[in-house]
Image 1 (tube, rainbow, N blue to C red):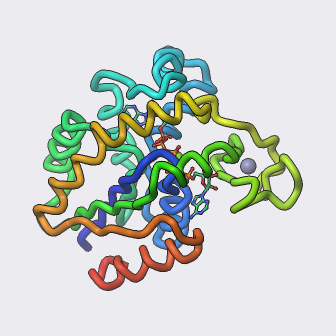
Image 2: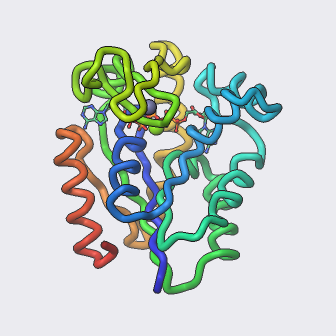
Length: 220
Ligand code: AP5
Ligand code: MG
Ligand code: ZN
């Protein structure tokens, strides 16, 4: 069976993580989120985590080839598909990803980019009220609140705020996305492999749009 690889693009706060999680649940495809991988390293206080934290706090990309090797390691899992959230984020990473794909995937495997389009204004509105649980579940105090105040619906854990969700850092993350990440969409567009979704709708409607696009391409 050919594998499907879906790469989420979109500014910080566009809902990549939220949608990637919903898609993974429905399809059984494995989600690879480089932000989540780094946050796990930070929580475990590993050498990589301590280094990554310095950059993430400032809204800068973690430098070097370390992200690509994390991705390559994650691709060793057995799965009929993979969902990328947060990689690639610049030209160098796109090159690295294509090299990894050439090693691992076959010609008939399907690779698509999925852009969740959201304005900078909406990003700022969303990230100020985001809350997270250590289990990975993401909430929004107004749009997607937990049932019990401050506690995770899934595991009961205490919710917390990400330390890069501060106005100054959000502004820098947006700048990095528009400068380094967004131009990569051209590569997929030229190959007819870009799916664009309106990210300024309700979470369930965006999920429905994504499923419709993927099923139109016979990927689900
Ligand atoms: P990463 O964790 O990838 O963060 P990001 O790209 O800034 O995106 P976010 O996770 O903030 O947003 P999201 O699009 O996932 O939105 P979410 O679903 O949470 O990266 C963090 C940092 O790690 C980077 O800045 C960098 O330093 C480092 N890093 C990561 N990858 C790297 C790489 N490849 N190379 C180098 N460094 C790397 O939704 C946001 C909020 O809105 C939530 O509260 C959610 O509940 C709510 N929401 C979601 N959808 C909707 C909707 N439709 N309507 C209303 N609310 C919604
Ligand atoms: Mg995310
Ligand atoms: Zn939890």
